[in-house]
Every structure is written in structure tokens, then in C-alpha cells.
Image 1: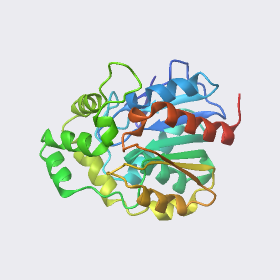
Image 2: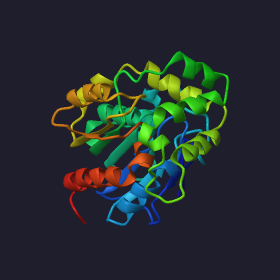
Image 3: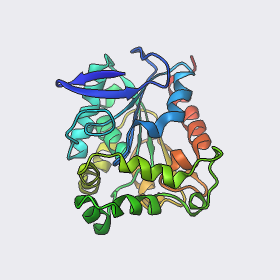
Image 4: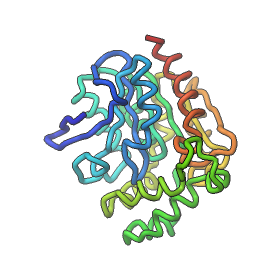
Length: 269
């Protein structure tokens, strides 16, 4: 699906079903250097269970026009603009990593417009090492290698893909390699410098679910719990033997946890 925000093309995958504005609209927001394809399984699941799904490519990512946005606040405002463009007065938001901060910023800025919220691999602060940021700024391939190395649990590096023949680390590396030069650095810098997570969390007024991985070295669970603790009534689940790239590592567990949350918050069809 293609639409426009301020005259610039935006792409979103719809899980194989036509998107129709309604009370069960669900927007997925990817993390740094990635695109809509990370949401392939959950997007298809929800699209086939009565939700209108839009797995967005953020500006400068995937098939959406650039440039990439330099702050989390700008990403949050862009998500609200995407809702406007899609004809949505309210929607549920699900974000991973930097995308979780964007979803949180949107929910904090316009609480009445977010019907339910899920934050995956979130953190406050979302620290980014100088080694990674410098490599990304130089468009050095080592930046991709560092994310793949740190972003997957030990178990994922040894295999254990639920899809026979699939290589989780290799798939993540190829996806990062598709990113436009400079975009990863912009994303990482936005996440690192965002200081408004707890203030935004205090404004959230919808059912909220935080999903963390116990082996996540990029957004450690303790920092994710800091976000969850600032959101009134939120619930938290920590996946065992799971790293930062949780949708790739444990797709069935992630989809099941999201289904419980969003169906519970928005009702079954």
C-alpha cells in the first residue's frame, strides 16, 4: 500500500489484506536501519484475524521516500501524520527498538489517539555505543556486523530458527545492508539522544504491553522495565533466551504475546 505525507511517498505492508480504516487499525513501526519486512509474520497474523494492518516503512527506509527523520519526536509526529493520511482518528501502535520510542512519543503527544500500545525491546535510556555510532557515521559495514552480533542471543547465533533453512543472523545482516547510506546513523543518533521517554510514558492513557528479551544486550531488560514502570497499568513479559531481534528469534512467541494484548485491548472480531 502506498500513500503520501506532505507530498512524500510512504509504503506500508498490509499483511496480504486490503487496509480499511476502522476501530481495529494496527500500525507496526520497525527499528533502526530496518524496514516493514521485519513484521511479516505478525502483520499477516493480525490481517487475517480482523485487524487493518499497516507495517510502515519510516521515511528513508524500505520503499518510503527520505530523508530519514533525525529525532524521536519527529518520528512520533510523523506517525500521527500517517494516521491522518490513512483516515484514522485512533489506532493501535506496535514498535520495536527505535520504533518503540517513536510509538511511545506518539502516544505521549496524543494519548486520545492511541487505542493500545505495544513496545518491543524498548529502553530508557536507549544507549548506543560510540563504536557502533562511529561505524554507522562512516557507513562502515562493521556497524551492521556489530548490530547482528549484539542484537541476537547466543542461541540465535547457534541456529534454532523456527523456519527450516533460514539463517537469522544472515537475514538480519542482509536487511541492514539494504539500508540507504547514512540512515542507520541517523536512527541510532535519534534513539541515543532521546530524553523524553519517561515524560511521554507518563502521558500514555491506553492499554500498554512491554515485551523484552532476557538476553538483549542492546536494550537490556532493566532499562525496558524503567519505561514500563512509568506507564500506568502497563504489563510486561520477558522472553527467555531471547535477544534484541526478538521478532526473528521467537516469531511465534512474539506474535502470540501481541495477539493476547491487542485482542484483549481491542476485542475479537
